[in-house]
Structures are given as C-alpha cells and as structure tokens.
Image (cartoon, rainbow, N blue to C red; front, top):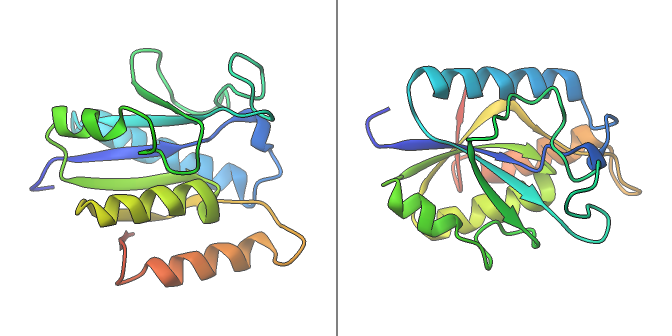
Length: 163
C-alpha cells in the first residue's frame, strides 16, 4: 500500500441475519482483512446503520459477535444507505489522510454499493476483496446473482478487486 488506505466494514449487524449468502465465509474473509489492517497499522472504519428495523441500542443493531470489532475502533453511525450522507465519515477520512478505501460488508447492492460509488465520485481509489461482501435473496434475484451483477458493474469502473 503506497497511499494511505482504510478498510471500511459496512453494516455487519445482527438484524441483517445469519441467512446472508455465504455468511460464514464472508465473515471469515472480513476478519482476515481486519487482522491484516491491524498488523499493518492501517485504519479500520466500521459503519453501523440505524433505522426503524435496526433501532440504536437494540440487539439487532449490534454488530455480529463473531466480527472482530473493538470498542476503540473507528465507528460511523448512519441513517442512510450512503455512509457519507449527514455523517462525519468524510471528515474522518480527511483527518486520517486516507486516499484509498477497501470495502466490505452488507448489503452489497444497497449500502456497500451506494457508499462505494459516492467514494469513487469523491475521487477516492476504491478496492474490494473477493468474498468480502454479501447480501440476501430478494423476490427477484438470488443473492449470488445480485453479488455477481454488482461486482461486474464495479469492475474496471468503480473499484479494483483484490484476491
């Protein structure tokens, strides 16, 4: 890593459910990336969503207990799919002199996609590790198709993929 990069972990919260596609593998991958960033002394920023279904302070609002989140990690609370919207996220990135962002988390087609595209528009260089984002099936598409489709759109346009 030449430029200063941060790992962004989005919405890995209990209320999104253990039914997330390939959940155990994705969580393992995210925890591996967290361990790597800790070892490299690079920032890790956790994003936590709250709304009517993820009430602040509720069990559903909490991060999955298997996620390697520490109370002294950077945390941004949001109420919108875009983690930049009405939050101190961009201020924190500027304070930390971050130029590059590696994204992980859920849901790939909602909050991860919205925040990644906004970051791209703000001229951050964006990265994604394969198998570090997931989602749920919906009434139109299964989760794997949603993930494959979103990653195909990101590739060469909005983000570079890491192995």
